[in-house]
Length: 310
Figure 1 (cartoon, rainbow, N blue to C red):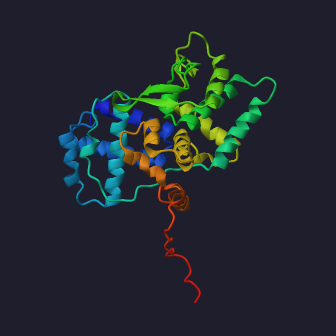
Figure 2 (tube, helix red, strand yellow):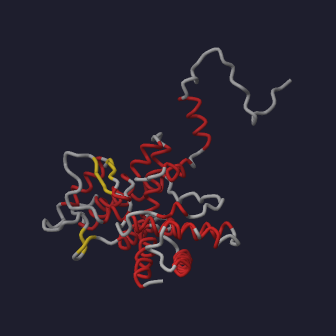
């Protein structure tokens, strides 16, 4: 494996730690898997779709769970290269598709999210809030209120949010543009923070000579969670993105609209958020379906109802 591959893997794992909150053991496993594939293919970052397609045969004797882990590492790695503009195409489609149960994303309840904002509101309620609390407020409002990826958030230009435009236009994976609605709360929080941003800064969230790093954002979110009484290991920028999606869907959002807001190329990726309460879904069908109010139809007895009394 070449030196370029090693550097790219380091950058990828840094992103996984900062944006996804990946555990140390996961990062070690991903590094091992990526290094192994790089050695097998004679290079990882520039591997062709055809060479990626040979992995299915090479992994034929491995368990489905092991193959799934390797595939997950490669999909995430090539998605990272595409998103960062380091590779124009994504060869992940050629990877094998082991049959395993996809894990549900970590989520927070609405009450837990409320506790995060309650703590921020408490800090901002003093006579002269400190600028860093203004910054934290803007960051969390944008994370939960818009579903931005951590990399998208920290690199926002200083004038990304126009006063007369309640949305952002972001360029994501593959150069695709998407429209991201921004809530009034988030716009107000950004406006309050913006007065503290140096006029010469090109970034909304500057830090040193560049912008805030994903790792620093990750640390700030963890610290806020701990102060709000939530186990820090349960919260990360990516978990807040999941919470945004889950809570919107539970509130009745359209899955296609959610796909657009999240920037998912495949609706299948968005469908993982349909792990909402099945009872709510049944109630939704019974109350919203066009035939729900049609007269003259006797409802069928539910199979889980008790048998009628004789």
